[in-house]
Each structure stands twice: as C-alpha cells, then as structure tokens.
Image 1 (cartoon, rainbow, N blue to C red):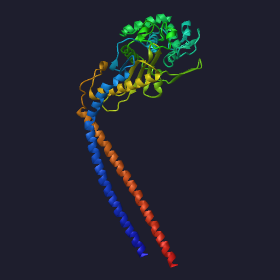
Image 2 (cartoon, helix red, strand yellow):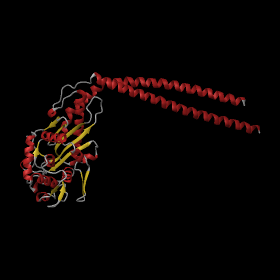
Image 3 (cartoon, rainbow, N blue to C red):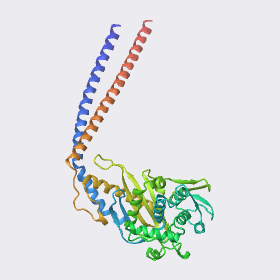
Image 4 (cartoon, rainbow, N blue to C red):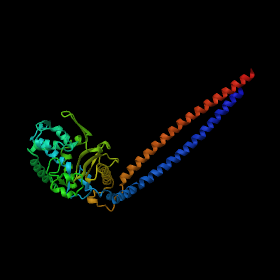
Length: 420
C-alpha cells in the first residue's frame, strides 16, 4: 500500500514538472511570437502606403488597353459628379434603351407639375401597341388601361418598349411630341452631344437586313437616339439626385404585373452577382451594341473616408452580354480603387486617363490610426492564444491523471489477485 502511494506521489511530481516546463515554453514562445508579430505589423504598416501607391500606379498605366474594344466608357461618383476616368467621353454613339432614363425623368417631372397623376391610369394607344412585339413586351392592346406605376416598372426592369411609348403618349399626346420634350430637356441639362428620336430607344427606321450585322455606330446616328458617356453620366447623376427612389425600382431582380399575369427578369443580370449594385439601365440595338449604366453603393473600409459613396459606370458598345457584364464589373472595381486613392491619398479624379505623377503617402494621423488598430488586434490574438493554450493544458493534465489512476488501479487489482 505504501509503495502504491509512493508511486502516485512520484507520478504527480513528474506531471507537475512536465506542466511547468510546458507552461514555460508556451510563455517564451508566445512572447517571441507576439514580439515578431508586433515588429512585422509595424514594418508592414510603414510600407503599406508605398506598396499601395506602386500598385495604384501600375494599374492605372497598364489596365486601360483591356477596354479598347468598347465604344466608350466613363467611371465616376454620381453623388459629386466627378468622373474618375473615361475614354471617348464626348463622342456620340447610339444609346438604345438607356434613352428610357430621360423618359423616366420627364414622366416624374410631369407628375411633380400635376400634368399627370401618380395614381392615374394610362390608356394604351395604337403607337404603343405597334411596338408590343419588340423586346421587353408586356402584351398590351390599344384601349387597355394600365397604371403609371406598372408602366414605369415595366419600362425600367425588363425594358418594355411599349411601356415607354405609352407613357410618352400619356404625357405629350404622341411619341414625336414627347421626343421634342426630351431634346428640350437635354439642352436645359447641358447634354450637348445628345439627341432623341424615340422615347423607347428603338431606332426610328431600322433596315431589317442590318439586324444581325455589326455596322459602325456612326451609320445609326441619323436614326437612333445618341449621346456621349459624359452626357449620360450627367443625366444619370441628375436623376439619382432628384429622384433617388429610382434605385428602388432598378434594384429589383424581377417584376410581376398581376393585371397581365406578367413576369419578367431585370435585364441588368449583374444584380444577381453583387448585392450592392442597385441600377441603373441597360440597352441594346445592332448599332449601339450592348450598353449599360450601372451603379453600386461603396462602403468605406477605412476610417477617414466618406461613408456610403457610390460608383457609376457608363459603358457603350460591348459585343455581348457576357463582355458587357465582365467589363462593367471591372470598371466598377477600378472606380472603387480610384475612390480609395482619392480619399486616402488625396488624388484628384483623372480626366480622360491622365495619370498623376506623384501619389501622396499616408498622413501621420492615418499611420497612427493604422498602427493602433494593428497593435490592438495583435494583443487580442495573443490573449486568445494564451487562453486556448491553458485550456489545452488543463485537458492534457486531466487526461494524464486519469490514465495514471487507471494504471494504479490495474496494479492494485493484480496484486490482490496474486495474494489470493
């Protein structure tokens, strides 16, 4: 019995020594790890601005050839009206159904002046019925009565042409008269490269033989609504400021109109891939190619920047939906980087791809904020690692003690058996 007690005491002493050694090693190792992490964090924060600056310069110098096959594009902030960069910004190109943004603007302004009722019904005209078999059709017939709200949603979400024509006739009596109002409003807004023939964006007289043939967009300027990316950026920015509720419509992935048992998905398929995208309008004809104005809410990931900024891309003349979506997304990301550069480094927006020679480094306040944040994170990581290590050691000790007890019990049972 005495010998067994002696064995247990020796085992406990050994366990204590092992635990003490492990704890000592853990403290030393954790201290070294924390020191190295702190040093690395300081070194990384010190060189962070330089690495970001060099990456920014490389991206600005090399990336833009990738977009050369587009007719034109512009990227900027619709809240401030700043264009970060653009290509062929003032050249005229067909814009297809992006024209419906001007139609939306005039309809909303007609509501504001009391010319038409917000809750009223629109009587479908023969002009509207004639374009029913075009893209985005909702199958309206002459004489039908449809709410203004449903027509606006059908015009902006599945890009219904007959909805645009019906609204135009409701406001001005005919699409031709409405086009005059569109051009008048364009001049008032300073859209000097813009001209409208139709409310929907459909060509005024498109030869059927050209449907499947790519033709230089200049051929269509006498028959299609046309504009420049700079003008479209101004127009879209103006609408979003005056009627911010437009994004509640354009952010919807689909639409249902119970009156027609109608369902259609949004032509802006990027809505399904990025929840921060909330608009704005697509367009497509043989002359215009695939076009889009896309907007995204940008949430700041650094302390000193503006919160909830927006990025807008105006893209004209992509060769297909997949190219349009991919390049629009890439331009959005470039716009985001330029926004970050402007906020963090004080870089002014780049007009027409002019690259600034020098990008300022982080200010002392920004460096201190980053170092403090990094230091706090490292302390938390260190504390968590210590707690986890202690828990593991406790579990290990319990396991060893239980194992020793079982062994001692086994020895005792063997001795008793031998005595018998």
